[in-house]
Image (cartoon, rainbow, N blue to C red; front, side, top):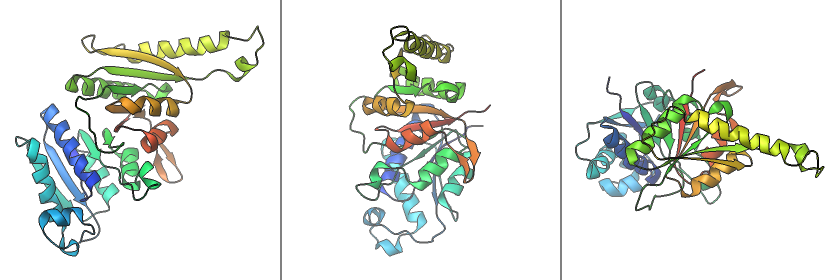
Length: 287
């Protein structure tokens, strides 16, 4: 079955950037592109699409949004096999449901003011936490790179499973960029006491363990792909956010857990989704 790349569209500039990225991902994979607009409301409230279709905002309908998104997708990739759908459904539920028959989901991140533009929208977070396939969430504003940045893979303990490694390696190979695997490690608290018998040894052991974890994670990655391994002392979230500043994509694995509010992401995945400077791919891992 030729599964599509799925893009959630709501008419915002962020979602149109997601259309651009989704079209690119579909073209790289030779896959179909599926654009979905899901809303419980019949009318769209906003100005961006209204300007493009030449209608007052209160008269813009879901199909107008899909028509504009389709034109945008075909602008640079006219060869794409493309389908569109308008769903009378809550956006996150509709996209999660559609993800069961997709190979990849791409969503934008809507910021509403100077404070919340640094945080992740509820739809994007919900889809990343519950989708049945990998999800790319666009972060960091419009990309202005003349060349694609490297793919960074976060190797964070048990959450760095084989699915995330495979996805990161595939993405790097498709784009012809290096794959950098990063593992954070923490210095044991007692190693900072300055006691000569405790200095150095525990920290060196932690760093060595991190290096071995990187080797293990990449053991099945093709030797033909340029690979780099890096350990860094610090909290995993902070290390990965720092690595994202000059990356093209940050990939993290996610073993979802059920909490009081339903399926939830781990702290590292949740943290980088809120703070990374580049797009983030969340790849579900199975036990």
